[in-house]
Image (cartoon, rainbow, N blue to C red; front, top):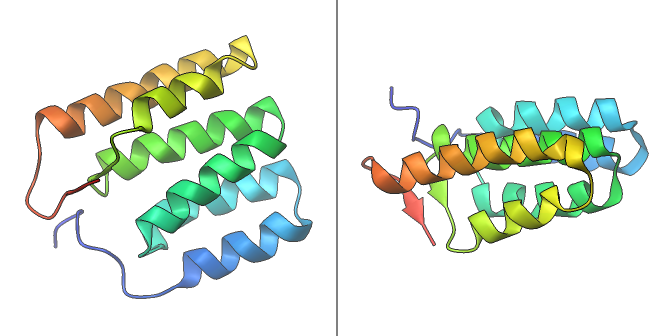
Length: 121
């Protein structure tokens, strides 16, 4: 089974939505990490990561950046604006920088080594 194939359920979306409403930053972070593997709607997850990164602590922002990088690395989902958007997440708190750099490396690798089924928007 290819790691690029989208999962078949919306479990990740439901989990992220429920936890993002009333959960702690830690709970939201765990839901985002799980959703990278479970959520079939990568564009929705990318947008949700950005939304949650902007409202949470530096730890949630770091997790969101990691998840965006993992969308590129694991799921092959890349957008033209990903690297500038990731860079913008790093400007708010220096602690986020290493997570952003790892995510950018994942995006660059996905761009340099495309796989069948990758989605580049």
